Amino acid sequence: MGNTTKQTSPKEELIDQKLIQKKEKENEKEKQRILMLGAGDGGKSTIFKQLKILYQEGYSREEKEKFRKEVRSNIYYTLTEIYYFMKTNNIPYYEPSHKDLLKEIKNGGEKEIVNHYEKIKKIMTDKAVQKVINEIHKTQIHESALDFIEDASRIFQKDYIPTLDDILKIHRRTTGIMSDYFSFDNLDLEIFDVGGQRNERKKWIHAYAETKAIIFVVNLNEYDKVLFECSTHSRMGESLLIFDDICNSRWFNNIPVIIFFNQIDRFEKKVQKKNLNCHFQDYVGGLNFQNALEFIKNKFSSLNKTNREIHIFETCALDTGKMKQIFMEVTKILKDFYSLDKELKGQREETEKEKEKEDEKEDEKENGKENEKENGKEKEKEK
Ligand SMILES: Nc1nc2c(ncn2[C@@H]2O[C@H](COP(=O)(O)OP(=O)(O)OP(=O)(O)O)[C@@H](O)[C@H]2O)c(=O)[nH]1
Ligand SMILES: [Mg+2]
Image: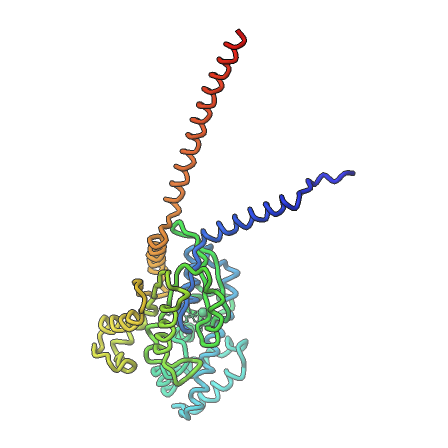
């Protein structure tokens, strides 16, 4: 039997390849690559989760179930952190037996945590433990994990399925670079989430090429905290240094830079009790939320040595409704900057197609007339 596959010549193959590459490039052009950068614990991955909730199919029951382990693990590691913090700082327990209870939980490992509800309840009433929690900025404990501990009776139920709120509150340090595609407001976006800690930042450069915008996430709430990876450096100081690098980097000369001043919910509460001048000695605005916020905004904006404007948003990454509004604003910035609007582009393409059709018709008409003329001449000749 003969081979029915059409043989293509090397020249044809080359043309095909070029066409495919052209198409790929065109598709690539359509996607807007956006990098979310910022120090560790800022809220990048939480924002990434919001994008999935808002612009993809969200989380299925099966996916939610997979988060169950992580929520419980956040409880376990928080209790372990309390144990080690009290031990290293020689802090005596108000009720000495609580130390043994906490040690038992720690030694039991992650899997056993669901069996320790009564012990946890007792430990959390210990006045010395409460003091540690009140001074949480001295530790590496995550506030959202404390919410999980408070909710342990629900979370330890056999049939517990994490809610969206639980999923957004989970803390897990990102390692490596992740990206996903989101289509909304007539734009196709490829958004990148990276790990923010020092050892993770070395990897960022691999995602720099073709970037169309930077979203820099600042954790406002960390002005009184030191780094997880280096206890002598302040988190806010580190965040300012990274922003200085990114904002003035030659990689990002001609693209929009957007700052999300995140964790505004926690910041608003904290800054009215704890003076911002514990970190910024030049701050004189007192325990006033607006003064403190403006001061931090200025600190970041003043690092910008380029001509472009920095776009600023105040965000709470846990608030799905508000994040939706903010993403709409972000797409507006992109559209204005790159004159992108799929709808407009679509309309333009339609008009161009219509025009092409009309031109074709005109050509056909013209050709028809020409033919008629030619035929007429022929006939006359024949006569
Ligand atoms: N209350 C509150 N919590 C937030 C907010 N944004 C993030 N969080 C919590 O802060 C913790 C850290 O957030 P992540 O999104 O993991 O931070 P990240 O920037 O991805 O951190 P790395 O992956 O280490 O770079 C999580 O427990 C989040 O639930 C916010 O706006 N408000
Ligand atoms: Mg992350």
